[in-house]
Image (cartoon, rainbow, N blue to C red; front, side, top):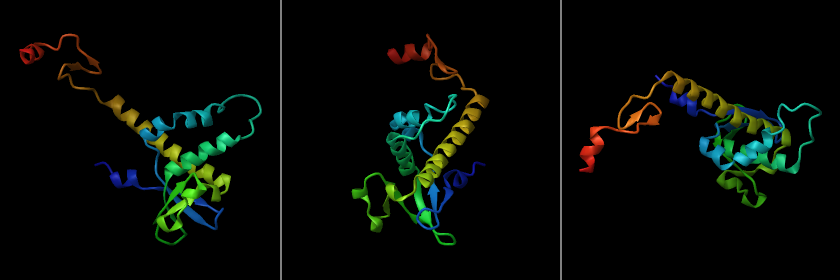
Amino acid sequence: MIDLAAIAAPEWVETAGLGRLDFGCCALSPADFDAHAGTLFGLVAGVGQEGAPRAATAADLEHIQILACLTVRQARKPGEEPQPLRLVLAESDEDTAAGRLWVGRLPVEDVGHIAGAGIRRYVEAAARAARFRRGSEAAPHDGRDGEAVRDNPGPVAVQAAG
C-alpha cells in the first residue's frame, strides 16, 4: 500500500532568522522544474567544478528565493499548530493577514535551507519514480510495443479506417 499521506506531508525546516520558525516545505513538482529550468541550471552550473568557489551573485539569491517561494506551504512556531503560509518574491505582494510573507525578510541562509529541502525531496521522488519505471514493462496493446509505436498496428487500424 502506498502511503500517500507520507508523500504529501511537508518536510519541516527549522530556521532561526525570524525568531524560531519551522517552514513546511513540499517537494518541487515537475511543472515547477519545467517552468524554472533556467533558475535550476543557474544554481547547479558551477557545482562540481574544480577551483575556488565563486561568490554568490544577485541572480543566485533570486534563484534560491524563487525555489523557496515554490516550496513553502506552511509555517509554525515550535509546539504550535502549522498555519498556511506562502512566501512571495515582491515586498508589495506581502499580506500577512492572507498568509503571504515576503521572502526578503528571511536571512539568506534560511532561504537556502528551504530551497534545498524542496530540491532534495524532488530528487528523492524522481529517483523512486525511476526505480519504479525500471521495474515495470509496458504491455503491448493499442498499437504500442513497449515504449515504441509499432509501424504496423495490425487489423484494428484497418477496421477503424473503414
